Image 1 (cartoon, rainbow, N blue to C red):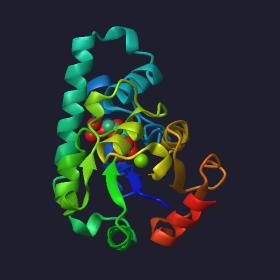
Image 2: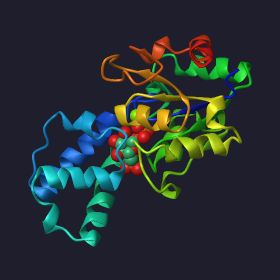
Image 3: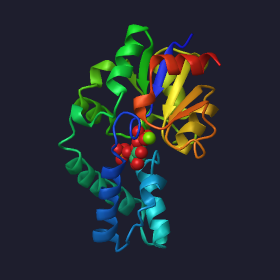
Length: 220
Ligand code: B16
Ligand code: MG
């Protein structure tokens, strides 16, 4: 039986990708003179703050123009824009089906932890009113490698004293599904079935998530 569920945040519990993209677009335009194409919204999903910035600088052919200190400073500036954008986040921003799913997992004594690349994850969960629902939040600052490396999902399972093989991992990004599989977990994903084909189960929307779906996928 499934003992734990290890969740990604952005795209699974709430949709912060649009705010990340808006903040990066503003930074790129105002500080770097780079115009980001819309495709970057998906491209930056699950990618850490610093790696996202490096991708943007690479895209603009400007990576060699900035020192490590500049990069830290620019990343901090982006985070300021992002925090402004998510200031109004509330429980209305929880994706469909997630509140019900959490209740079902709790009723079945399934431990829940978070495996988000976001350093803002605790603050976001608080705004959504979900902070107390989670048994643990893995700290992305403490893992060596970001997604698609399995580190953050391994940390998520360990944080609730479970083996990866006892957990289901939940993701919306290709890199995240790869991380779950390489962690040795069963993967449930939301989004495009073709794109996320490495997952054990893909559903079109978070409203399709349920304890039964997770448990059936786990047992397969
Ligand atoms: P922060 P996830 C990821 O969240 C986002 O998808 C990604 O766009 C972002 O750059 C990353 O968190 C880091 O976020 O700047 O807040 O530390 O999908 O792993 O929950
Ligand atoms: Mg995500």
